[in-house]
Image 1 (cartoon, rainbow, N blue to C red):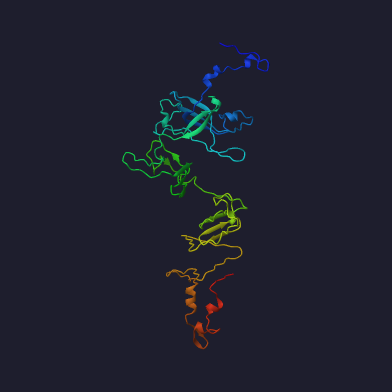
Image 2: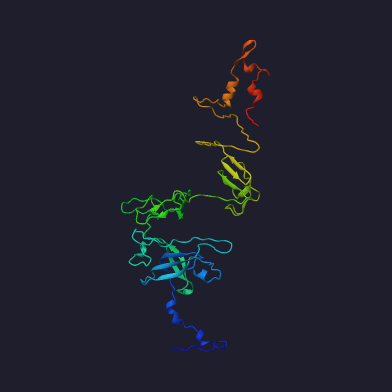
Length: 379
């Protein structure tokens, strides 16, 4: 046994009560990561969060959880408290990200869940799995290094393998993420598919899989709405035209886009947009399409403007009443032209008078051509 020195290298006196012998704390040291399942999650401001308890106003700055260690290399099942949930990207005063894992509240088998885990296989817990490291090698400073696949989820995982019957789904090279039921998929061909069908759904442990997913109960009324908020000074564009090298928002050059290096010296013209193009800002909506725009409603469509509504076309049809309807039809376009150019008969003091619209002054023109243009204006 060696004695602790009473004088330091700078000849200052060391108080013996403040000295630490590392051998006395050897059991608090750990230099390797461990694998476990998350039991409980404690957001930054809850009472059991250590960073909240250490703050005067009880507002913490880290999210924490309790982890049941399943594999530490020795076979011991240790419970780790105050495990810091680390973010996957910069999380400071400017850029910030937050996504909390799922704690354990049920068993995948459908059996009764016991909080003391007595007689429970930890692999059956429905909580997320993670790899835990230790800051400075200290057992009391655990943090999540990485998340780990759940051994009981064989439904979501890419199933390009054969299985017992040799059947499989070709799902390799896809990107798939589900968060609170919102599913995002980027296929191997580069198609993007977003669905909110399963938003706010809940797991139903012990039941058979549904629609290729771990069994879950859907919520038909809550969750799944989508809202996009655009800064008032900016715009929203949807463009089906060919991407012009180095052209970004507003048709301006954008040096951060993938493009030739060195870039073209002269400004590149974004050019005409022969294909569908939608431009939206706080004052206007401009839609250009090469072929067809269709609005269909089983009930009601309304166009309203405080100042003016303009409809321009070489042929304009405003509809026609059904054959069994007592209402007068409203017709324009070719049907109106046909009606104007058909000779008709009116009663006068001198008897029936036949009128041929084609002979009405000015000679050689019809009331349709002289009084109405093919572009209709109503005020």
